[in-house]
Amino acid sequence: MKISIHAIISRLMLFTATASAVIVSGGCHPLEEWDNNPQGNFEALWTILDEHYCFFAEKDVDWREIHDKYAPLVSNRMTSKELFFVCADMLDELRDGHTNLSASFNTSYYRKWWSDYPQNYSERLVEQYYLNFNFLSASGLDYAVLPQNIGYIRYSSFSTPIGEGNLDEVLMYLNTCDGLIIDIRDNGGGSMTNVETLVRRFITSRTLAGYISHKTGPGHNDFSEPFAYYFDPAERGRIMWGKPTVTIAGARTGGGSGMPFNSELPNGWSVRFSACSVLDSNGQSTEFGIDPTPGCEVDLDPGQALLGHDTILDFAITRLTSPDSGE
Image (cartoon, rainbow, N blue to C red; front, side):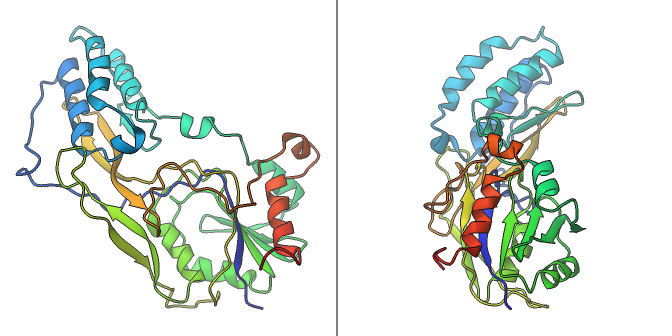
């Protein structure tokens, strides 16, 4: 029996791409130098973001206003750690989990992209009550056949590469199942290349995946026209045939869709942030997350979890096994 993706449990799905960044020549981005002191490093950080960050409009952030808010807090008499925390607080104004400042003693991180959401995944709950601690693992994928003859794949991080041979084995093992659940709750993102490796097994023709818009200059609105990128079906050992029926069940994803850009301050601290906007196949920004399929919004019920029930996983199983599931 051919298998199809019918339910994808989503919670915190972040698409990032680490393979590319646009470096604009000095003719468009004049090379600037800053003094290696607290004020110089602060101005360097603010300017780098000012010229390269891609979501000021989406976040409704007045970056000049943010500069004027934090610049008075910076003094050349302050310590490196004091400067770091002022800079980190400034970056938090972007509300972007992909924006980090890294020093030898700390890395800043905007945590509200996930802390403002309910905790909709319990690894222990799934492994104990649904997998009976009996599952296989290969190339970052945990997989098993649920009692309802539903295949289950847990992909916990898009940063983990998926080997083609490993994926062959996983999909062959699940090939006789009546449906498939791919659980990406609490997945913090990673590489679009790894996502593509998985998706290619479920398509039979070239498929529009979305659009990318690059920065073309230092202005906040200096972007290229969005250009399309596509996923092609796997050429080798394809096991999953046919256009899949996909349902996204769970809560709205945590968002975060920009391709990262890396730069360095005069004192050696590195900064990473979103520099290229990624749009979905309808041309809509995915920076603020992806909604579940209509009618498939569900959270993990803490009371039911204490009784051994994952309400999101139960919903997906019912969706796959119910005769009126909408197939």
